[in-house]
Length: 64
Image (cartoon, rainbow, N blue to C red; front, side, top):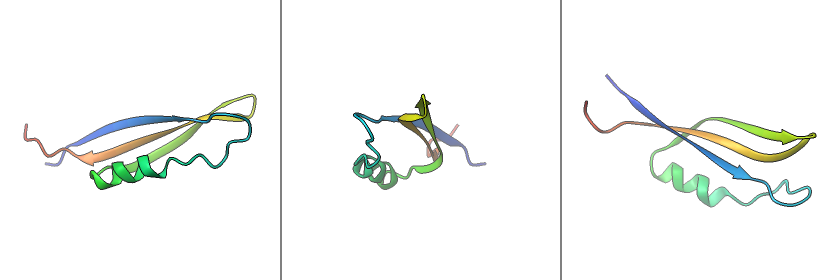
């Protein structure tokens, strides 16, 4: 039976109208380590995105 582990990462938006936050390197690093994005959602204050939360999942390689 496969088991999985999860990790949630918060990437904060800085400044006014920062819609092109360069965080691809971080997301690519997770991908290289076997993590897959299973959800992403934004945190908003007064209609402005202040952060994006990414939840990653990968198969747990340890045996129980």
